Image (cartoon, rainbow, N blue to C red; front, side):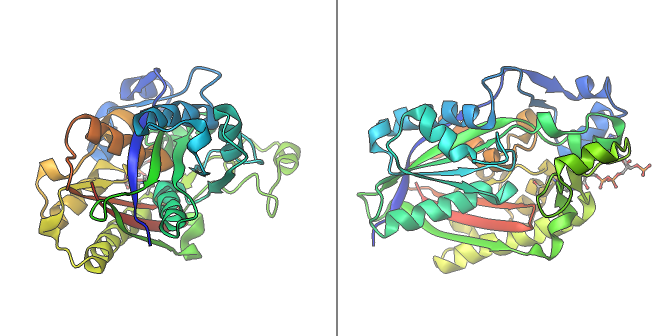
Length: 335
Ligand code: ACO
């Protein structure tokens, strides 16, 4: 069995900054409410035509590949996580494969929302472990801004989400002691509709149904979130899956050097931090600047933490996520 390690990281966010005050001009909300409930001060909304989900993924991937010292010909497989694909089909994985000029390698799209990047890393890790692939490009990218209800009706959701992309090159590790130690992924479809965007869907309401109905009160094509229910489930599942990873490796909370939680809500991160008794310098948050970027949040945060010198060789880094599905998961890695 081989081990996989992250050999390069990159992220990209659109230049266009949207502050809480900007939002309060188009909906009934205010800076204090948003900061108190979510910790978010600003987020990015795309302006450039090229900043599609796949387009931003390409920008992040180019940085990660350069840092990993790999070229297009070296990539064996693409795993692309998103809930906001450019097209209904095909998924953004093949668009990125085309744009980067990769060989005719497989491109797999992951639909696990906020847990997407953890799911993607887990899958990439399995292929490297078995020896099938040597370099896998793992991408998380989201354009939320195009699909949000930017009126007071949608404020409970719209203030939370932002656009951005992050990428990692996962490579066969030459060092037995360095790389991914374990991944654990879960789902519970029982709560699928508690955090969902249900239309258009081939099995439910399709675009033609929405157009025919022409109902101004129809909100089925904007995201719905039962915020308090999500919050309560998130804090339980985050804790469970972090403990699951620690136990699988005979490690304890005291061994954690850096926890990078999916940036769902600063209050969720703080709850987890306090539950595990971790000091501020062992938990990385950047939701204040970018909002919740779903599948992109962990690779963006991981890249920023690494760029800031907060992750050093030999560190135990824990990645954990919870999100729509419900889905959740963790990755333990030795840097
Ligand atoms: N600005 C001002 N007022 C608002 C806003 C807003 N943006 N949104 C909602 N309100 C109002 C509501 O209308 C409500 O008013 P009412 O009391 O007159 O009915 C009041 O504020 C309270 O609304 P709640 O939805 O009950 O607010 P809550 O305290 O639950 O906070 C929040 C909402 C932030 C979404 C919270 O439930 C939460 O943190 N949930 C966790 C879910 C989460 O973070 N999801 C992130 C994405 S999912 C993921 O990544 C896992």
